[in-house]
Amino acid sequence: MSIKTLTGLNKAAVLLICLGEEAAAKVFQELSDDEIRQVTRTIATIDHIPEHIKDKVFASYGEIQQDLAGLFVKGADFAKRAIAASGSDERSADLMEQFVSGTESRPLETIALMPPKMVAGLLEKEHPQTVALILSTQHVEHASEILASLPEDVRADVIYRIAKIEKVSPEVITRIEDALHREIGLVAGKEQKQVGGLDKVVDLLNHLQYSMDTDILEAIEQTDPDMAEEIRKQMFTFENLVALDGRSLQMILREVSNDDLTLALKTASDEMKEKIFANMSSRAADMIREDLEAMGPVRLSEVETMQQTIVKIAIKLQEEGKLVLGTGGGGDELV
Image 1: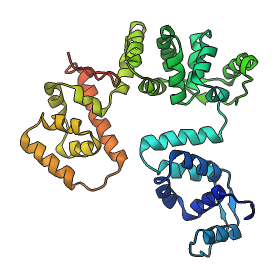
Image 2: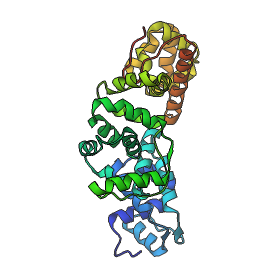
Image 3: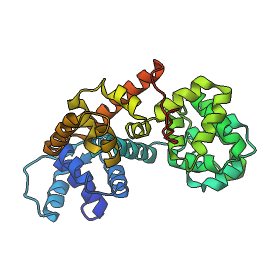
Image 4: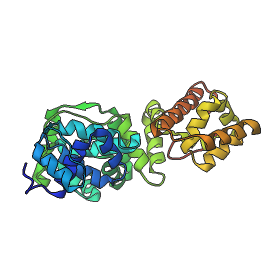
């Protein structure tokens, strides 16, 4: 590492490591996702920072000289911890996936570089199980675009097969790579990957446009009603409660304390808040409004955890046959 060859990105990476994880996380909150991806990938390549480099970098940013020896760091571990503390759980998870995909080889990685419609055209004559496996290895946004470009009559079958996938052996990946290599020159890693499953399906369906998710779920229900129901449960969110009728919403609210409800409403939409307030006593509603106004900053993860707790209560009541929930995509009213 030479100061003469350090780029601006290199200097930023060195500075963040020297400042520490907590400071780096705060800096990440002010950067765009693309900037975070660039700097964390650079951090991951660093395993030693000579003292004179540290001093030069600090001096160039106008910081006070610190009497520290050169630092040995595990750049990849540092980057992952900083990303994990950089913001909301959802954003951190997305950034973590993109960081890992940029520093570790992925199976069928060339597919990720191809336009979705081109991939769909390449795969439309493949067996649905092969298509499911390939989509399971891709980023959810890219996979959902490919899925939307596939013939309508195969989408549900592919989604169903993705939900059934757990782990895939390197030999299976290799056979698929060899088959596709003749057409696109695909070269990918051979390590075993965790792919597919219900989580992948829920992400895919949540990224689809219009009513595709409803159509796919209805088709899956004809083959496997239990799986369709499980997918619907995982797609249901706190904001979906706004679609419930008053009786059902009141039933849920009776299971939640005012303090817990106040926390859950911290990031809720105005429509959601008013729907909640309209289904409780005016005195209780006024108290929660006052508590919300007086509430200081809270961690987004705490709010999301409480919202998920309330969703689980709703799902439990549905399993007991006391109410019916709509899907995340459709937001259906009760019948």
